[in-house]
Amino acid sequence: MRIGPSSTGRLAENVMHFARVLRSAGMPVGTDRVQLALQALQVAGLESKREFHAVLTACLLDRVEHRELFDQAFVLFWRDPDLMGRMRALMLPKVQLKEGATPPPPENRRLGEALFPHQPNQPPPEPRQEQIELDAQLTWNDRELLRKADFDSMTADEWRQAQRLLAQLRLIFEPLPTRRTRPAAHPGRADWRATMQAMARHGGELWDMRWRQRRSRPAPLVVLADISGSMSRYSRMLLHFAHALGHADARVESFVFGTRLTRTTRLLKSRDPDLAVGQVVRAVEDWSGGTRITTSLHEFNQRWARRVLSGQATVLLISDGLEHGDTQALGFEMERLHKSCRRLIWLNPLLRFDRFEPRAGGIKAMLPHVDRFLPAHNLQSLGELVDVLSRHDVPQRAPH
Image 1: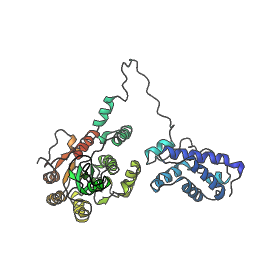
Image 2: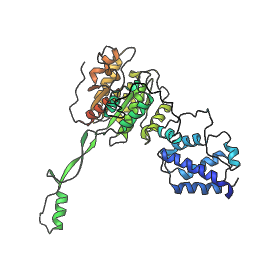
Image 3: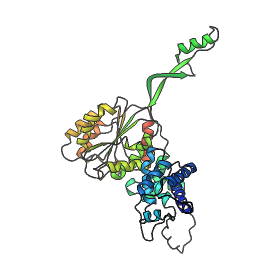
Image 4: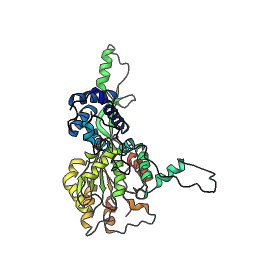
């Protein structure tokens, strides 16, 4: 069905509204693409919802990493049950939710805020009789309390604020020297080729020496995250942390394990952290299930260690160490992992307890083979981890 000039007004208005939603969610959609979409709809018509989706995809989408965000927005925005009848009548009104209907929450936080920015909030509580003398909202003290709040006890609002603060962490990685060199301004290793070239340009006279220095690169990281039921809340935030690491200067390989080992490096390549972590949760079948640390470490050592580890790599092992059964094999796999990397850092949320003691058999088997034993239960502990990753120090064995 072709679109007549007298009936394009409301359709154009809704397409423009949809483009504004995509723009608010972080997609670069310009007015030229909206005009292109309206022109394409004039040619293609509104024969089916599938063709309508294909036209908008071809005109508004230009990056493959935005495809999933676009599809989610399309389903939620054009979800009117009588949409096809309205499209064929060419009288598409502004898309609104029916009263009492609750849409499924989008996995992407920015998409949810773009689609539903004016949802009514709960009525505020009645004011008390006593007068409030001080109102210190969003103060430094509140940020400090949020940095010390446990991931497992955070509310939904605190969780979103913690993600924003996590994205603001300044990530500095330990520089490792390489065999390659680059020009330097200060005296050091002489660059004879550049020096001779400079002499040739000045008639053979030596005006100044040219120097070179060794290049450095950030130390590579390998993340092994436990996603069992007792660790799922912490692992989800630490996957956001791994996503931030992977989009900084360092080369990061990430794996998750519960009852089996799953490589998640490609899933975390998406620039949107919410989409990336959502892809990991959907792809992993044993999320928030049981845990088999020994089996997962054995599979990593057998299949992946030679591919992703090097003598310069730092391994971040995120687990509570609560392994059942015989732990002798666990100690062997931990020793093998430790010998395959330069530093093995164990992040354990159980260290949030002041009276923590390594009494469990799994923890006793793992501790002798780690260089650092650190907590990972709040933003402050992750900030301390960044400081450890940025220091060029000699690995220290954790206390037995």
